[in-house]
Length: 306
Image 1 (cartoon, rainbow, N blue to C red):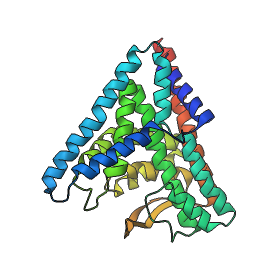
Image 2 (cartoon, helix red, strand yellow):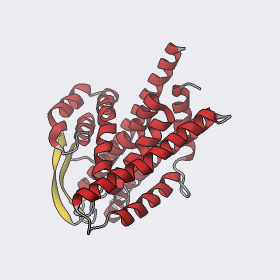
Image 3 (cartoon, one colour):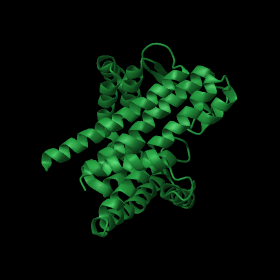
Image 4 (cartoon, one colour):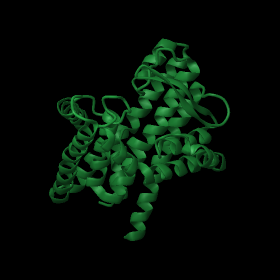
């Protein structure tokens, strides 16, 4: 089965079944990663030692699983079916839309507390003091960023490196989400996961920015925002994706937020006013449109090579 057909089948499975609620392999991997961090990341150790242990932990957690997944899928009697299953498990498009729609619906019904609770399931910031615009902005930001990390970047690495590529990317992304915070506890141990995630997402993030621009119908505005505002974050990738997405939607994102008890000011992205509930739905359609464009491109490429 060509890569394009595998992608189409995996996205169809995601649309039909959504995310596995119980027993998802990534949840099990997350529990394992949590145990490793608690046992290895001892505060009594110097920062250099914790950074070295973090590097070893990333290698031991990611490489064997990526290699094993690739080896099994290449030798299984129904290897293409296994490829579809693995890519499906790596995607989270329908789940992302469901979470965002809960926020949108709560805001549309003026249920601010429900909206705060719903957006709290999507972001790592403190949502207790968010107003309607802040809750909508948090949901849009999560859709744009996760649309890159959990959907389009997964498709990219499957196209580039097959099953080992998509498994390695998804596991590193999970480790970055767990360990990649610049807190006193995690800044040293999570350094390797955060830097490797930056490397793996550098090219996909820029392709995603271009995709958001093309799908939105406002390519010049989106690309202008990505060019002028994309370098405003410490992350080499988040700003490009966020700026292009905000420009594509014609909204402004960023501003103050509370993370792990600290009030931080985040750079502004995009143009215009803060997003309304309707912008949440448009952000979901932006990611969905991007996934369809990438699928079509993969299918056409497969036909051309054939």
